[in-house]
Length: 183
Image 1 (cartoon, rainbow, N blue to C red):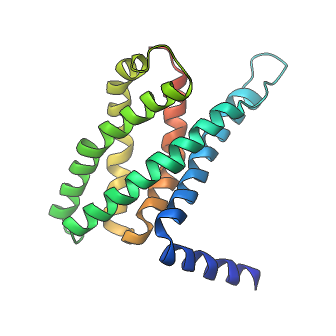
Image 2: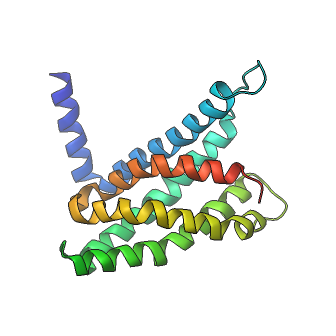
Image 3: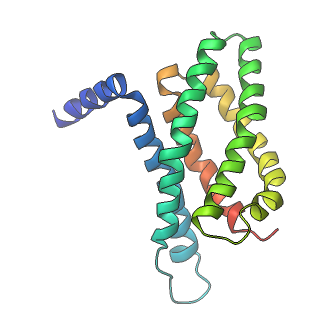
């Protein structure tokens, strides 16, 4: 009974407030990825016998990034993309894939690295982006092209941001790992 009410509530929220609902869900998934990354690196795979505390400042930065920046951008992007290129033919899917990977992904990666550097109050906001943008973009091609193929072939437009958010849970774990690397 409660599950049925929850399902109806979620459906109503997606219909009446799609941007807010998508932003909330995407933000939760984004934060979940960072939280799982910290659990792994600070609690499970610790080299010393003393696990480290969670870094809630970093978790908060991921919340800001996922909820207020990425989700609204992706919501708007997929609405435009689905209106401009309607259908699931191979030709349409290839157009969407190429646009998604080569038009929106590079700015999103720049927003991620520069935005995080600003929130971390680094001296040089662009250094990390300069060092990590190309390898991250190459990795994103290997991850997102197959994921987005499934998205554009199978996922109804109303659920694109949620699907991408679910994939992003995996991707953000990869991105968190890349961010922690020294280049």
